[in-house]
Length: 93
Image (tube, rainbow, N blue to C red; front, side, top):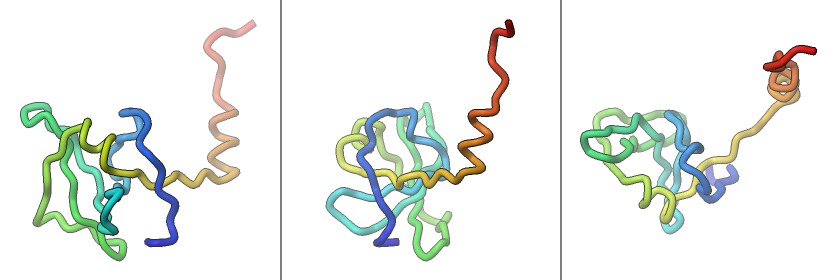
């Protein structure tokens, strides 16, 4: 996982369930879980060698995620790009 490109989190819309998150200062990787409105934070699960560990989790605020963590870059394939460009427009002529 060290060769994967991680980018800064610029917008909260990047914070989706299943995204891989890494600290700017550590090499440990986490998988982002659901947002918990009662605790006002996201659930992070440890992630290593393709396995998500559900027995341990951490609640972290959106502000801390955006300031101290990076998100794994999405790799778009040609099929993904074609499917997004082939959407139906809202207004037809």
